[in-house]
Image (cartoon, rainbow, N blue to C red):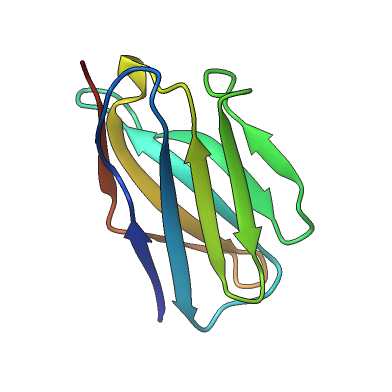
Length: 117
């Protein structure tokens, strides 16, 4: 089994910063994609940022220039540094690991991010 344990999240003011972290454990391939997704009430879950094992990254247009994804392959962790937060960033943020060899994805439990003055 694969477990993803998230930390971070909370209430921040617009323009503030927050850092989310996720630690993966269990059995999975080193060939994988780790990513962050978010889901606001009444909306679909959307991809925010991703990074594969070769450090290739992708970002949603809405967060480019503000969010930065990073990962430590040795520690099996992924983080999301969120700067200049906006109210529209408010959502439950989920960590995901996609195992490229078994072609299976795993989700974390989610952590609430609320941006409000």
